[in-house]
View (cartoon, rainbow, N blue to C red):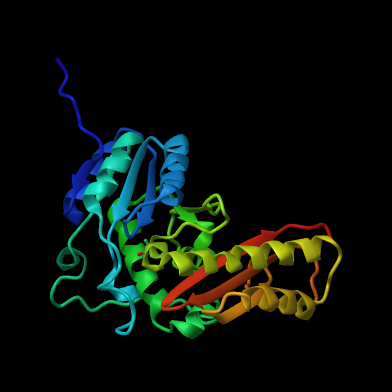
Amino acid sequence: MAEEVLKPYLVTDPQEMSERLDALRAQGKKIGLVPTMGALHLGHLSLALAAKNECDVVVVSDFVNPTQFAPNEDFDKYPRALDADLSLLAKIETDFVFAPPASKMYPSGFDASVHVGGVSKILEGAFRPTHFDGVCLVVLKLFNITRADIAYFGQKDYQQVAVVKKMVADLNVPTKIAMRPIIRERDGLAMSSRNSYMTDDERKQALVLSRALDAAEELIKAGERESSVVYDKMREIIATAPDAKIDYIRIADPDSLLEMDRIAGNVVILEAVRIGATRLIDNKLIERKS
Ligand code: PAF
């Protein structure tokens, strides 16, 4: 009788992960990677399901990457939930979970860095200057460990996807980058592991992010072309939340993320808003003909 393989298979060692995937690749299997920091929600599961549809083998990495947090950020507070993550991924029969300890990803003496300029310096990069270097470092390591054919990222971190795409283009990394839509709660809040930081009252106030994006879309679809008018409307909505503080709102070209004063063609609207001590980001892609 064939041995029953319990899924997902948990791997903590990078070398073992590479070897297991090498063996599967040698059998012609297509490998899909979903990089995560764990504390999984339906947004992550939608990425794993997309990978399952398009690939033969799915690896979800579950690693709270220390190098993408600045010393004043929430690394210690970031939720860790490996057991719950494994149960969720078992339900959708994910093949592997790669959850290395930090000491295996960054052993003593580790001294490499990855820096992508341009798109990584604006918006999130302006508020979190070392963040994307840490993201690129761990993502490139994950790509090298898994040699995945396709890596799946959520649109929620729109700028992260743009930075990773630039990194793979500039460094000739063969992994294809797939972006999948934001998954929202029924009331519109974009799913995020950081939503758990908020009190009930803050959670209600956080709805101004999606409401501001919806109102912006409505204005643009009704023919508004002045970004300043759209910003005013968004600010008005966000100001209805007493604990909200805007880091940025930006109407931008969907590829370069450069600001557009006049709206023409497709745009992405990006925002980062603090609700009390919790910093939230959200965005909306608006595709138009003119
Ligand atoms: O989006 C995230 O959760 C992280 O930035 C990523 C891509 C898993 C890298 O640590």
